Image (cartoon, rainbow, N blue to C red; front, side, top):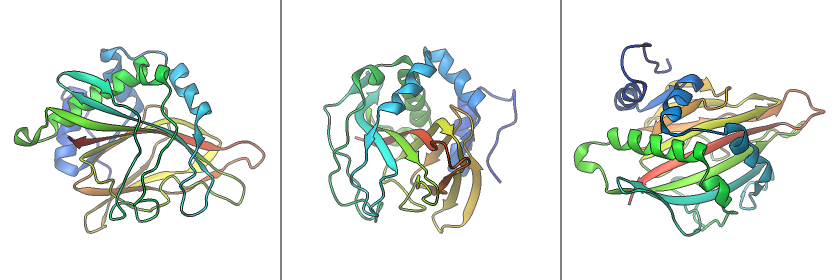
Length: 248
């Protein structure tokens, strides 16, 4: 069963924190996410979403695939505010990413105007507060190391796109937010959650822009099934924003 909350019981973000604490993950409806973001200056979602049309190819795919495009940025986030860090490589150990881990991967940077976009800043502000409140007080850092990934997964006839080619996994961080930006002519892409013994806990498909999965990376595995074109004659892709938080 997917954790859900009863409407009109508690402030939305407080309910997310309770669900994360209880279950280790929460599936956030698009309307709830938008309501939270609009309290923090959320604006121009179409302009923000259009930036996914300018992603570069991911050339590090150890499976030889060319179905993933991305841009990347790192930030520091905390009580002092949100600050973009100098561009740096993304690194995961093979313990967490047996397919593509073990190397420093340099991706094209998130464009400056997107890093400063009100839609993104409202997301970073909201997720920083949420994940800080979801962390035990004695473990809360002064600032978080935040990594931002713009992903486009492309699907071709007979060649499904792989949102998580490494399979069910953890990212080696504290918290993960996966926010749907757009689905274009794709089927499937089901998000699956499992406990540390890999027993299924829930599944759902992000289908509306701003619908999200929030994950306690210490407690659960997550993965997404391949996406396939609905109409083989048209372009097909799944766009998501992934934001990870790790104690600095």
